[in-house]
Amino acid sequence: MGLKLQEVPAGAGVRWITQAFGEFRRYPLGYVSLFIGFLIALVFTLLVPFIGGIVLLMSPPLLTLAFMLAAHASQHGERPSFDAILVPWRKRLPDTRRRLLALLFFYASLMAASAWVAEAFSGGGFDNLVEAYRKGETSPEQLEPLMSAAGVTTGLAWGAAMISLASLLFWFAPALVHWGHQGPAQSIFSSVLALWRARWAFLNYGLFWISGFVAFTLLTNVLSAALGSTLSALLAVPLQLAMTCTFYLSVYFSFRDCFGEP
Image (cartoon, rainbow, N blue to C red):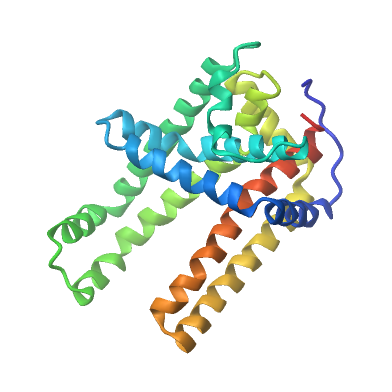
């Protein structure tokens, strides 16, 4: 696929979400199985010392690319499956695996840097919180001051800011490596350029998702008050899975509008 940036109207942001919900309704079990299967595979990977931690840091772009590949296959008559996770590593002509691996290592480095910055700004607050959790005997009343400490709040804010920035930089980057055959640096540049050119569409897209998650939180609180925490949690899980899968699917439709059909 040659890179071909396209003009994207502001209203496209909401359309991506409605398209994603429509796609999820076609194959809900397929996409939920893909998501859960990815998490299970990640848990087993964490059993491998050192490598598991690196793979964990690489996992968000990998999951995004897997959903984009599954959605693309679905648009061409194939059912989404767990196999989408393996597709990038089977591609030999052209061989983009090294480029994708380099991109993922860069993302993992940014995530590690985010954790380091959060810890540095927390002034040791994270260490105290982790130690309290590790003991397993700390009451909620004792945890509350540790969690609300000024250093912890500042560290979380800085860490969240860096993670958000990395997410924006890598929004389309894995797909541009896989479909566009671009290098890591070029894919990040192209991703940022596409986000900027379609900024009004992404603004609507972001506002819609924020509103959706706020509504979901309010609904969960209402269900918890009416039905109890246990039953409300059971009802909330499938809704949360649906929203999560739909979010990842919407990235594919935003890519298709920004760059054309892969």
